[in-house]
Length: 170
Image 1 (tube, helix red, strand yellow):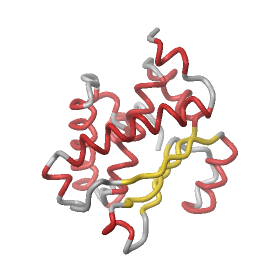
Image 2 (cartoon, one colour; image 1 turned 90 degrees about the vertical axis):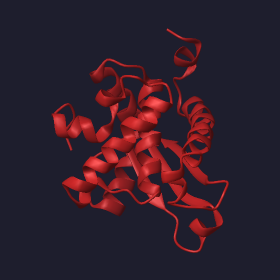
Image 3 (tube, helix red, strand yellow; image 1 turned 135 degrees about the vertical axis):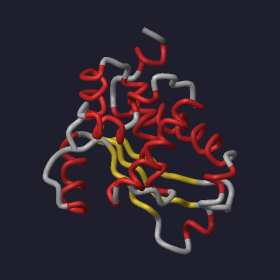
């Protein structure tokens, strides 16, 4: 087990590591012309909060009317903030992250990367729930970003790929 993986246990530890990884993801994503067109203002800023099961379930119920704990929620910032570079907020449910990593047989660190990528794509305006074409486009971006980030197993890791392949419940 790597040192990064072994030190990530608590919400606070995942919060700190998540912020470091999110910063790298934002820098990498902004360098891609296709994504940079989604928001030309630089640098991009995204707030991240890692929370427990009760909090993520309450947020999911309040904002999406789904009464269960989920893995990641994306809250896009209202205008004019995106024009100023602030894309919005991501909230990650740590217990769900850990459960999914265990079920899929990969590290919690890898699952954190997947959730950050998925959430960022939502903040950039991608939405897999709009239809099959949109889901396919977002799945391709998930796989591409995860691959660039050094996750060669990205095809099996992306959230949308999991749902469409039956590896994860909606």
